[in-house]
Length: 297
Image (cartoon, rainbow, N blue to C red):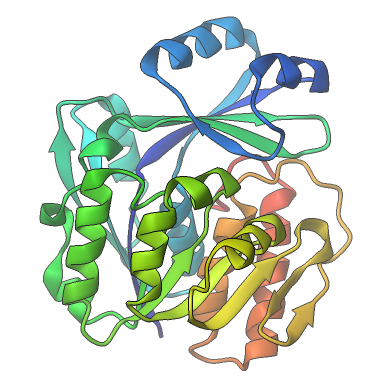
């Protein structure tokens, strides 16, 4: 049974159904992510209040750990939350005996990510980080980190000064844990290029992202990763020289599918070969796409 330690953004996803024309009015490129202010968040919530269809715990690494947990991994997540109802709601989502959470409390409100879902099931994100800006090394549970097989984090995790400090602390303390890093979003590659250059020298066991993210990374920097996992949406995924096709499904909502894939893949490696692990991960991610929300209960 694998043990996976992750840290990153604690977010509550507010999913909103939009037509293609409405998404163009939002002004965020389809399929991408943009950080927004509290003012912008309130404007969007007011504008599309009648089109909200769910509020669920999210955050990329937390989603991955949930999928890993659903596949019997032991997981731990570190984050920063606000002293508010959304923060309590997020904490309560770690209710399985195989999952645990440690966190610091911020004076800022708990982070919220608006998930704009178009009729084709594709998601476009607008995130107000809030308390995530105060992610700090104090949130790390050293004993659990040092006994974990994998350390999982992503570009979102180190997008703030506190997040970068937490990354450095976790890497210095991880001991035997294999480092797994997600590219997260094309917009963060250029923004975090200096940090990526630093990270590339630390030793990455697994680098993962979708085809657009990985293409941009390859054009920008050599991450010196031992292993590469690339997702291709409806076409499936690849791990090094292994490829797996995704089952043909009607996509309802792609929010969290890539997160679920990596969490499931890392878990399956404990008992399966690379191909079978990837196949099970792709199949699980496809199940996420068949329902609303980033997590399967």
